[in-house]
Image (cartoon, rainbow, N blue to C red; front, side, top):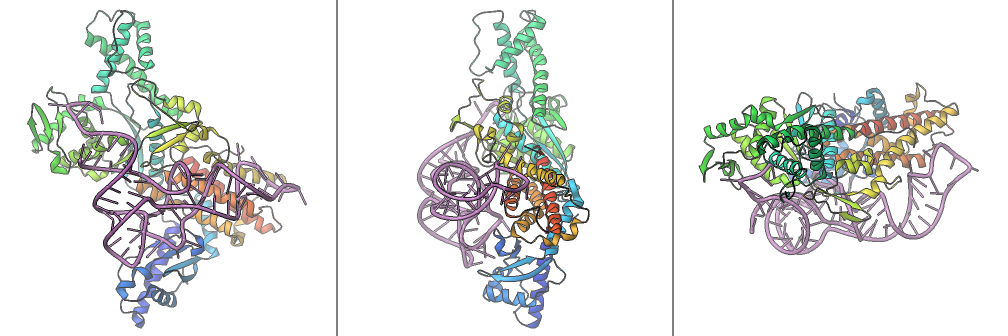
Length: 562
RNA sequence: GCCUCCUUAGUUAAAUGGAUAUAAUAAACCCCUCCUAAGGGUUAGUUGUGGGUUCGAUUCCCGCAGGGGGUGCCA
């Protein structure tokens, strides 16, 4: 399943190559150049629909001025069997190619024939991808960082799926290790505080209200009968009570955010199955560990890390990275995903090379694991940054955020920036219902088209079945600009998938809305020429379909009226 | 110290190594007898600094300055 833009670029490339071959045979150039060249879409459409740097790239090899090479290519090129109607030399030696009206019509017909599938590609067909995201600690509520990770991960999974991958979403539940210890400790103290005075919460425990609520609810059910039991039994009972509630809460809150996971993977299963300990055994067997100060270390320096690190602490407990290694081994080797994507906070960046080093030592291709690091989110309100302190339990939670901001806006905003850039989330802007707010701007474009159809329908004008006969009448620049942008969607999906960057899709959507609004002001749909009206209605219908498709990808609603 | 991300218009952000560095927003002005003005148009304004690679650098490499994050037998 190729798509038109790709075909067109291949046509251009082949035509250029055929032209230099012919020129070399004629003796107009010394040899057939070999250096690779680029076919691209110029930023400014005044420079053609596609351009190539071939003449410039070959300047050295052919010992000719780029402009002269370009002239030779133009003289010898045959565009007869392509979508192009002409080719010009411009600037320092660019070859600019212009598409024929037939191309624009073909793009629109393609949108109609593919329908909801328009934008899909076979880029990743036959490959299995797993996107792990959020994976918040089940010891408390999710925060705004999780909100960003959720929106990004979910959209990225959707992008991969559109790009042809067989994609699954996964949440990794950290229900083992120190976090759970701390959770049990905190619950225990809050529980005992209900019956005894003078018990203080340690600095290093969870101080949130949710812990107090759990302890109270537990006490309502069981009363004080756990007070007399051992601390260990009491903590276990408390954790067994509260943890499933928290996990169910995470699932519920994420569903509100329109995120549904295929699997919830528990860390504890890696301990109970022995998979975690097996990692240490395997690495030891391969000779990649040593003992020092009573601890077991992994020889990470051999695999490009700056320092070795501990796998088994001197107290016999595993460090956090061991179950993580087992987990990723499970993803890549047991469940055989071709691509495993982790969305992590930037504070984990030091950990990524270590994880990859260990996987490599176990014989796993570490390149199959791709980690998207997200920079921190700062919430801005009234032009000021809201300080969020996790330790005090006063961090703004995902649920609070969604109470203040529409879900559509949150999902859109968190996908506007690349993961790599810091994200300032402006709470005032997100709730503002105006042109300043890009979510409404995009949704309005969709609603506006629906409204045009309604209005014209009330005047007895409908889109006819044979409207596509008149598409070559769409020759105004605003019309062609839209069609060019529509044509680029599939490539955009592929690029987003390759770069693991869903923010390209929000940018795409804003641009499509902008182009439509410009068209709306420049060209009347309901005009004097009946055939042109049909062609423009067809165009509107395509824009509506594409907007609907990309908004669906982002899981943002496409209202018919606003 | 070491690792890493960032630095572009007053502000927030774009730009697979390409053409006159793009938008939004804030400012000024203009456009509804006509499909929702939740829209469009016009004007003005930007690559932190010093080198290098290149026909060409915002982009790649090295140094410097400034900011975020990391650098535990915590996760």
